Image (cartoon, rainbow, N blue to C red; front, top):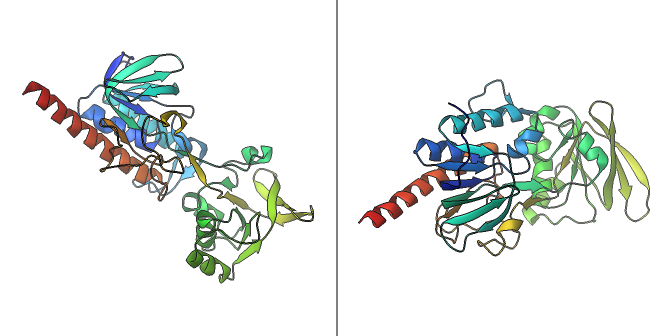
Length: 317
């Protein structure tokens, strides 16, 4: 098929291009709807920054994140979805057709699926970028098995950090949790589990100040916030678990968000605006897996297709 070229009006515009966005693209375009996928600043989403993905079903030997996302993109395009590498700067969900504006163009559509995901909060160190995918990770469930027998450092003190630290004890030789305070903010039951785990050690009142290594992470420098003293921790891996930020700033005032900025869903994948749906990490802060995001993308696409069919049947009556 020749490359699908953009038009102005679509049945469905999908904002975002991780597993949720591309899966929604596959399902909606296979349903013979006209579909535009606007990829955003990182086409393919968080998986573009991961190396090997071992837990996505159907790939017994694993698959590289960028390859998996390119496959999904091509699959959506094969069925007719138009994919543009651009970023949405503004939306108008106040009236239909909905208006979606990017850096270079303006489109409108009868329905929208928001799949903009969530970005892990970063430490903000230069060395963190340098070792991304080479020992620095933001997802223990995704990458834990790559760190068998390593000394692991986890940063954070909330539920995610404590859960990840506990999970990583299955693989790591030791797990040190670096937290800027002297108490955890995780739930009591999670705290007890971690504090009683002989493999987990807590480094209180400290922050990570630098990451060093040759080709991959070798040591993590931590700084005591009270004394200013720096200590070097031996580490084969550093897991940053200080929360996620949903990518929803452009939707403020357009659809309902919760107090953390995640999209709140009313019924299945529907938002509070009729005709606007959401899928993936942009509303799901519990699972945050590629396979669950893809599942939500499929659900949203089916919901959209049914919603459009009902709308059109009512118009014809």
